[in-house]
Amino acid sequence: MPEACQYKIGAITIALIPNTAQGEYANLRRFPDFAAAGPAEVSLEVRCDQIPDVPLEKLAFDSQLGWRLYRSQDRPVIWVRSPDQDPYLVGVFASDYHSGEIYTNPSQSDPGQYLFPLSYPMGELYMTSLLGTGYGVMQHACGVIYQGSGLLFIGVGGAGKTTTARLWESQKGARVLNDDRIIVRKKGSQFYIYGTPWHGEGGMALPEEAPLKRIFVLKQARSNQVMPISPVRAATDLLVRSISPFWSKEGMSFTLKFLAELCQQVPCAELGFVPDPSAVDFVCNLK
Image 1 (cartoon, one colour):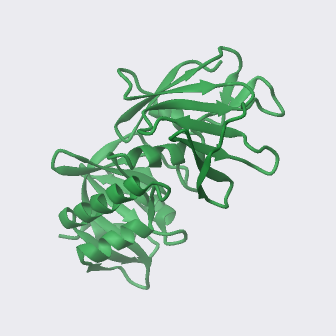
Image 2 (cartoon, helix red, strand yellow):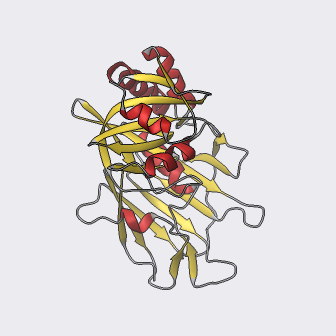
């Protein structure tokens, strides 16, 4: 049955409180690995029933990919639709995203099941919006913990993030946080990377964190090579490969400042790599 549950993602504990004890969630994927106890920083009510009519006053962003973001009485509304259901998930949130309601329809094939409210894309869109209020940034990246430090390998689709993740999986002492979506936050004076439940095709997702030591921009090449890049170039590369709250002026202002500071503090380089274990050895031997 849909019970009250909590998940810790990017060191933020989110409580989901359903309005019914009937039925169960479907499509949880890797979320059970991120279950957490203790006080929640965010509390979201989950409405497990037919989605009501929600007043949509202003279209703020249209992805053209199955979801839109509206404004309704100064509250952001995430509207997720498919060819069969328009919508099938709706999130209505406070302006700071620390509270709100997510409406999820019963399954068309099994009325006793409800789509998990933080499944893709709702969960990723919600987290991106929350991070943009001052928490951090989500990157299209493979994140690795090796010898206690975090390594971030960023890339667009096809750049080799999942390939890199699979190569590091076999490296003794290494742990892959995620093969496509990594959260970056600042804790004190140190930047950290965090695994998320929204993985790529490699299916890798760990609820762990590590201080960030280096950032690599992936580029497939005929030989393993590294070329340092300027903080300005690195910030631009990270922005292009980030999952940013483009629908929020304030969120984008924070994101730009965050990335600029990140690239000033953490060494960044372009990594040309051969897709075999030699690439891992090459990075491990860098000074």
